[in-house]
Length: 171
Length: 344
Image (cartoon, rainbow over the protein chains, first blue to last red):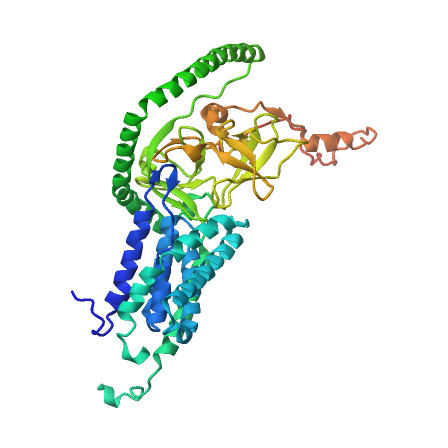
């Protein structure tokens, strides 16, 4: 199967495959491995999709796939059901709203915008958790997860690069 | 009907608008999921079927994914033990001397403890069964701290059971399915555990916040705490047994008292699930339920009213006089106790 950008956008290729990859990496990084006392980081892999899909083009399927990915994170990680669904959708909405501004920007600037959207998603999750358990989660722990998630931008860049020009209506 | 004849065939909605509507619908569904979620109620029915299914599937998948990590750890451990044997031997010899002294002291204390218990007539708690489980998945983000153990309802694990590592308390079970149990760690923001300071017996609530060192809230008593104090479970509320080791007190960077958990330095692959529900399981419930209450003798109210009424002067009974309608005083009757277990 070829993944060349010349072909029209197939939902399975630009939504289905990345979503499955995110789920796979999430399971992989949940392995209880500790090397020299250090555990694996826990980045939010679906943030790559939330940012990449919004930049590529508006879509009907993408928000619902993000909702499914969020529900998977909640069930797998054990958070309140809907926590990550809403957080990812808020970040997706932010990126979609600023899509015209984001298109064509340099890679460092896109990385900065991606980090900003990660911040929006984690801030939403922080607020929801605070309301849910009536206690404030540790900001330092949130910062670690923010850093780990921000480092995933190269994957989002690859996703955008591969499918950005596929739909001529949204170039 | 062909598309050309469809009156709505010419109507075209811009994709951007449709996508916006889809986004709003998805957010509404997500918010509804959030509002309907009943996490942390410690009721079996609240831990939904979806969570049970995901846990049941995740346990074997996590086991396979964790295998390379286990092998790597074993190999590193083997190399470590091979190259650092001499140093480790010296350290272990020092530790052995210290432990021998502690073991002698423990024998003396146990003997004294048994004598005092015998003198006071204190009944000791029976030992509690444990199940050993392997951790197959681990979520350690700031918003959720859980572990998935590969033992579930088939081994009698139930919601609320405490989970320990080889050094101390890890958390407690909040979800059970067949072949998997989800363990809420002490570090999770939703975790609140009643603890006490070993030195002063001061009570506090250990509150997780997603970081590695949970904080001590609601500390009671005067000058209750010092850095380095041992923290144990207090057993208050009956959720956990008393005296399980938790960690040591430190002053956090934010100026609050926090706890360095004993399980921090542990390998996290094996845990023990303690089959402790509450203190009610430590007594003989059947014997309690068979206890018969003694009969209670109650007074007949009719009798009391008749006795309290002033009696008229005695008159000669006329033949037309009607017989008294009041029934004769009935003898006192014992109250029958309710059958055991009914009508609570």
